Length: 198
Image 1: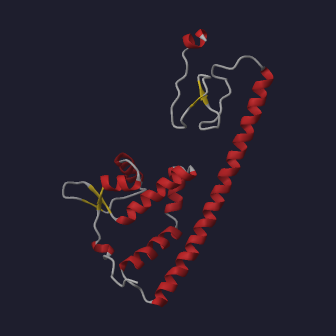
Image 2: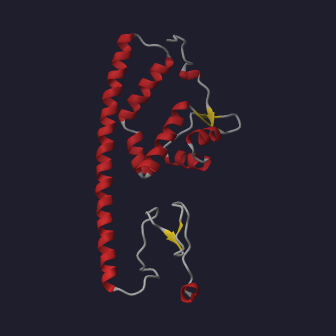
């Protein structure tokens, strides 16, 4: 086991905004927007005025991105999670471990703190996910009721009131040709003239 010390966080290198964007899988525009919202602040600026970020900011950016992409959180919901004391505790523990090798007694204390904070964060996330699942179930039931009502009315599908499958739903096709539509592809609506021609 290596006993080499890691760099002191106070002297650790800072990342330029483009580097943070690349590491976190984001755009520089997104990072600037998050700075305006107070979600992710740079640690400083270069002499030329470019934003500079510490490694902790890279982790925070990735955490916010994951909350949005994986869990569907809004930025306001992501803010609540990343600004909880539990996340601060985990970041502080990580920073203290990175600063050097604490004594075994201190390591045990830090790990106990991290376990407790992580458990509390998991409980909050479980609660949030349960609420999201409840909301999703309600929307799915509503969709089924709407489709049943539409089927009762009969008539050809089409126009604004046509039943559609949710984006990314299995079996979504384009033009009735059986061609799969990628989940991120935007479909355009037919013009009245095009609808009349079919």
